Image 1: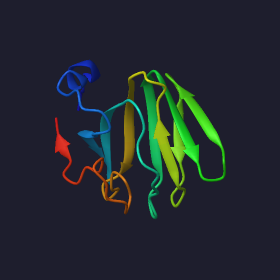
Image 2 (image 1 turned 45 degrees about the vertical axis):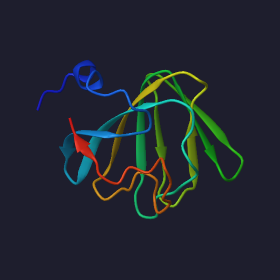
Image 3 (image 1 turned 180 degrees about the vertical axis):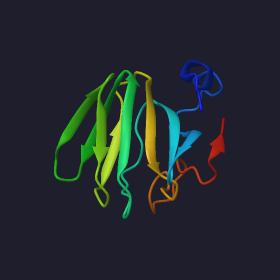
Image 4 (image 1 turned 30 degrees about the vertical axis):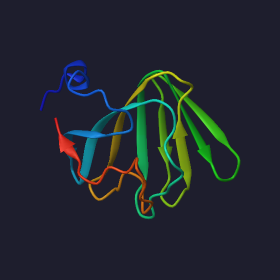
Amino acid sequence: MHINLDEKFSKFSAFWRPYIIGELNENYVKLARLKGNLIWHKHDLEDEMFVVLTGTLMMDFRDGRTISTKAGEILIVPKNTEHRPWTNDEEVKVILIEPKMTKHTGEIISEQTVTELEWI
């Protein structure tokens, strides 16, 4: 399967709403535009991988750490780790690689929660 990332990103503008662009074994490959912040949440059973394409993704952890992940870098958040992604008022484009069962905001439901994932 061949995927043009620029073409896929041109199909949406919403922030914090992941879109599925492919499948890899039991994982989805997703794209997302990020700006501002997402709520604190965790994924009890799934690791989550962020591949930062543009901008800088900030990730807060409950132990007080904040990790800055720049374009060209990857951040893996281990399962059962409470985290809050955010940006410094810039748009950040990411690829997410995570198990198909992963819920957008874990078990937390808020206005930011996406319950129905779309393929683009």
